[in-house]
Length: 178
Image (cartoon, rainbow, N blue to C red; front, side, top):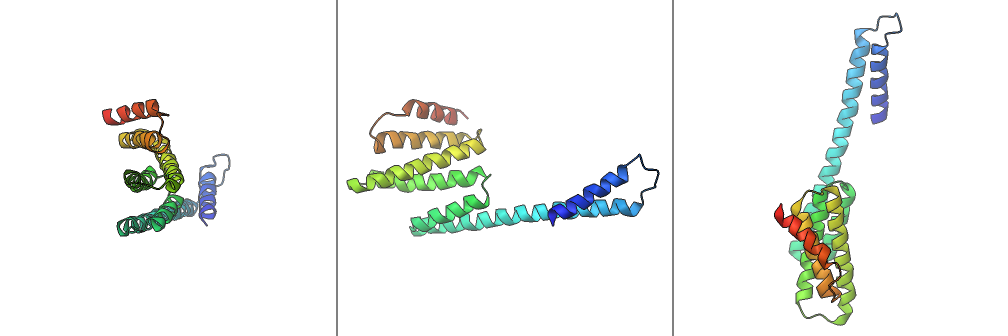
């Protein structure tokens, strides 16, 4: 429907501006063009608003699940949030932040060795989400700082090495300067 109205509107504008024809274009044709383009833009706005509303709904559900301690449900709701609005860095950042908080709380406790794989998987997901947030909004300093902290936790607590610590230091310093 959007493309239909947009096509009608643009064709009407083209006809209204066609100076090679000697026919006089009626005022009604200009009205059709304006109405069709307005309707097309309205559909675009409604679609975007719906997707944003949907993302906010899932985001709220994820937040409630975090508070309730139902982390599996929270991660699923965050994934749905990101699917709804894949170009909003804040959803990637908040998902990573909550997953990081939960994972780092587990790291602080004494863990059996069989949970190390889960921690590694979670921290890889955290880093992936922070990197996506950084890609979408490269000038947000807290994204850089949080990504640096995730690198540090991954290197020291999960791998027990200093791998990527230099990159983490640069990211953190840049984030804290801003």
